[in-house]
Length: 585
Ligand code: DON
Image (cartoon, rainbow, N blue to C red; front, side, top):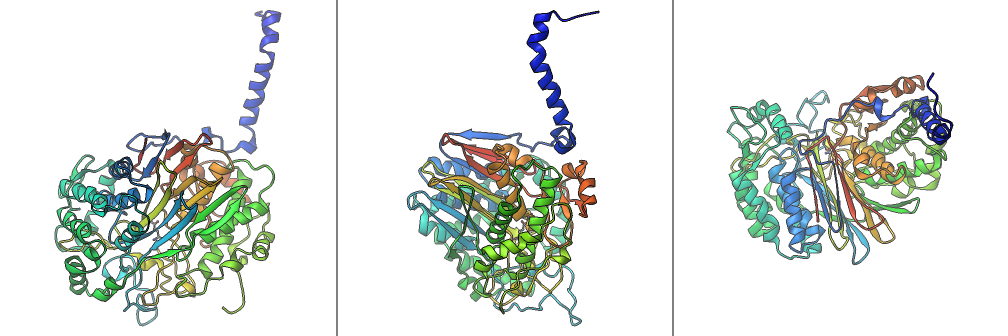
């Protein structure tokens, strides 16, 4: 029989034992979500996974847009300059969500003043909108009216937002330079990715149904990867914006084209609505968690308040040790999320129209109360979760930029659904949003994202619809160390919550943090929605035994994230769920 010589035996005793123990631990039930149990990843078309750069970084959902952002940084622009150029570039090379016909939110860290700013360029309801505009005489919701076609359109905010951002924080002070690259991209065309070809093909019928003329998005032969998408009308519109700033969109010939489109289709937006649109600087929601300061978007986004509540609950409820994505972890986060969404859906709306009890919602007493009903062993049915009761009272996109000075920006911008209302402004070549669906169009009726809205978010003239978009920055020792955000409708807030924990609590690198599977709970429906890879793992059965309903939700979001390592360098992770442009220098 073969025997190891005694000396070798002793030498290998320790490693063999430890390997054996490690294997035991790896397959032990608590490590239920070992990577081996997850289906293999499908990596995005670019194949970029992660990037480390010493000075500056752009993380955007399309390579062309990221390149334009990087060029601006290298030309001496700051993060805000690059953000403006990237927003316009995305309006061209990401027609599904990038836009001038929609709106968004931006959170900016100013390294000079050590302050964060939040810019709200969310769409507004037209002055002629009214509470029941999507209901028939029997008070029933008229299908598709708030999600498709002209009546779903809110007054666009993007161009005003970018101009405001430029006036307040541009370093280059050269508006033309920021818009020009997008004009060239529209005029000369760009090569579409495989994912874009698929989405465009999926929507060909809808585009022709909704537009009775041939838009640049129609291709009779079908789109394929590498095809050139040229948008000459859009190039003209952008040239007006380049030459006349905000007025180039909200007044004059482009405003006329939008109004003609409204008249042709019996839409509500008037020339006054456009002229009167104003983006608003708001105080970010700030809160601390274990030595980090978070800065996120205040209402009309629900992101900042919900995120602050979730971290408050996590602080109260997380046990000393918590294993990544095991049953206890998914249960805890789902319970936290369902509680925060109860408040979100009930109390939040446009702060210029409804009084938002921010202090009470984030107050110690309320958070203690929310935490008290948590049962570590059992799901709490959503009907037992009640929002705070005080006295009377599928497509978005995200990008981040960090410049060499340390200024940092996180921007989430949207048309709401894929290609918004699908209405293309004739002779102007851009999609209008369908953001009106983010209002609660009828009490108790779920919207596109299954969210049930309350009175605080009902339609009123000129009001902003509640959003889940959560562009977020994290600072520590007077440096921005993390910028992140994602599309995903109602799942945005919980994705941001989970990726923040991935990085700051579990110490994952940016690639792991954005790649790991995600899950989501939003109070109603009373269920955990899970990415397929997680859904296919044994964790589901155990959660069901605890009383949770669980369903497969495919992919959740497309996270963009830039992280500053302790040595000062920057790291970005590309989310395989979308196309990516991750560049730095
Ligand atoms: O503002 C909101 O919450 C939604 N309009 C966002 C839409 C979205 O993220 C779609 N993306 N998949």
